[in-house]
Figure 1 (cartoon, rainbow, N blue to C red):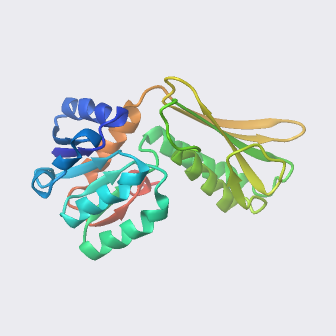
Figure 2: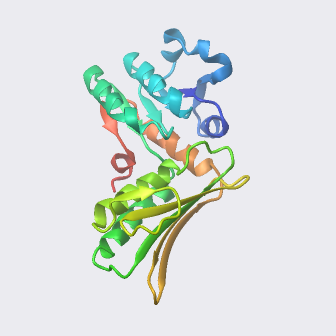
Length: 238
């Protein structure tokens, strides 16, 4: 398939390299230096677009693809305030739009495990739950989109938690998320349940960006020919 890459940072470059190894062709690479090349003519050379840009440009990129009939896969985080508008546009235009805060198959297994554990801990009020996420120093948003997804799933299961907060807290109704930024760390997410007598931890550690890139390419392959809004649960079946 022919791929347009909207955003050509570390993730875009990893996708570019992996896509060629998987037999695909990247026909367009857009970043801040050549934004003028994101034209109707150029985007129509692609079978699908993969969008990993910045929060302030994500919605415009997704909108541009949908309006021009190009299926789009987006992994940019921290723009969810515009997500509903993107879904509405997708439905109106009969487009195809796939979003995930994390495309790693392993992380999505971790999401499912997190939901299951939170359900088990619903009535175990002696356990306090906390989260930690660690990323590379170029990661702009904190907490990460993956951490927010994990937190939202916990909040849905645990009535004693009403919202997440990205700092230390002593308020029992808040889910504490600690964000750390360390050189060359692709991504680590830790969920901890702590009681006076023991502790339960679940953790996902990414060893490289390739897992995220591979998942995004698989999503792009799957999306072609479909219509509507999709997430990793649609692709993976859980």
